[in-house]
Image (cartoon, rainbow, N blue to C red):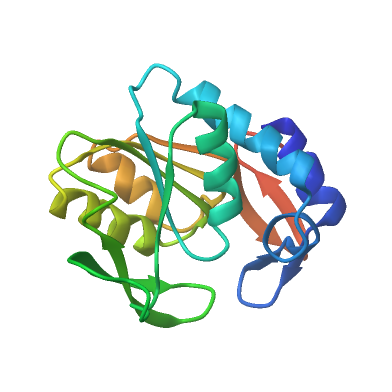
Length: 194
C-alpha cells in the first residue's frame, strides 16, 4: 500500500533495536481516516475468502482489525492479554511473545465468540517474528475454525515471521513490507532506498 509506505516515511522514526515508531498515526494517536483506508485495503485483499470473523490481539491491533471488520461487514474479536473478572465461561488460551515488549502473555478468547465453521482473518499492526500471529493461529485451531489468512499493517521483512508463516501455506498480506533499516533509512521490499 503505497500510501502507508509514504506515511511511514513522513511520520515514522527508526529507533534502536530495529523498532519502528509510528505512534503518530497507528498505535498511540490514531489517524482514523487513514486506518479506515487500511481496513478497506485489507477487505479488498481478502474479499473472496469467505471471512466471517476478524481476530486480533489487544491492544494495538484493535483499530486495524476494527477497520477491516467494518469494511468486510463481519464481527471483530480480540484476544485479551489477561482474563478479567467480567469474563465468564470457557476460553481458548495460548501464550504469545511480544517483540516490542519482550514479554510473554497468556491470551484468551471466549469460546462464545469463535467456533467451528468460522473462517477467520487474523489482523495485527506489526509482523516481526510472527509470535502473536502464531498464537492467534493456535487459538483458531483450538476453536476448530479455519484461518482464511493474516494481514498486518507493517511487516519487518528482514525478520522471519512472515516467511515462516508463508512456508506453512498461510496467506499473509502485509500493507507495507520493510526490507531493512540502515542508518535510520527505511527500505521497502522491491523498492530502492528512501
